[in-house]
Length: 160
Image 1: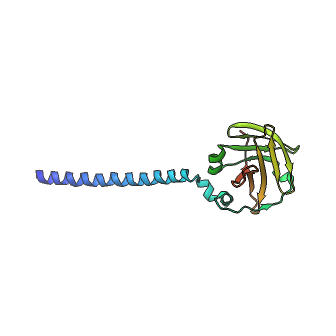
Image 2: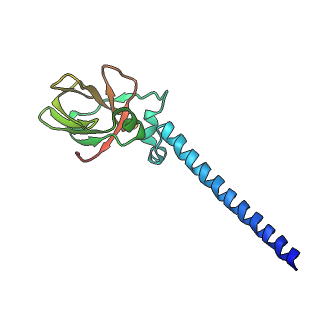
């Protein structure tokens, strides 16, 4: 009888060990997947919204002219790519040709000018020189005029 109890305990211990190892393996896969998404600057949200495909490397974003009044409002860049590049982008574009914003946790303000397709933002310190434009899919984008090539999606937002 003692051998039966020992054998039963051995089998139960092996089954418990297998269950623990299986759970650890699944948790490792989840952690590894999350780390990979952070490394690639991908947010679940970014996959679900087709507008964020405009931010992908190699994406060819074509500008579609829009009326200047379409740029008036409060905008934010919510993607992981924007967070990686700037930390945060929150802009308020005013009808009177002025703008203010919080970018990388710093406050900026200045003037904007309509160029026939989009608007160009410049701040009073000479740090910000950006272009806001609409892509052909209707997505509002922002790109740095001094170092173009990393356009970011802007969505309606709230000022910080």
